[in-house]
Length: 194
Picture 1 (spheres, rainbow, N blue to C red):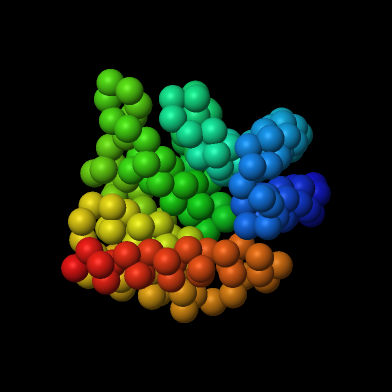
Picture 2: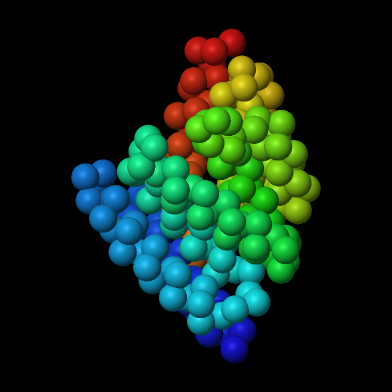
């Protein structure tokens, strides 16, 4: 059973990174929509497992990002619920990815009355993800991005450099390469913001 879950999650990860980093922007929304349906089936197939919920949330969040605006708000609300469910099952699953992804939603989504955004909650969740996976590329990248967005460019640079130097993840070369490029681009923005 564990191998089947791992295989299904690995397939979702691979599909996500191909769409995110290798698919033309004009095609991404439709591709993420199709992947969301697949991710939901994986979550339903393995009830009580945190990992598929995290990846279903990541796919929905990515789809929302491509959709943009208020059209994506219902998707991020669904993703939020998935991350919360995953944390309730096992917050440490996938090296704390649910905390990281939930933190990202809290700083990217508008606050009340439009959405649930909350910078203080975002910081708390992102720091929790970092405590679980201090050398990981994603927690360092997103905490760096958060610090840059909250006008703390010097601290942001520290975390973005850590993301760039993070150890490679087996089988995640496409995602790691894409994330490092994003980190380098944000690092340039920290120089302008200082």
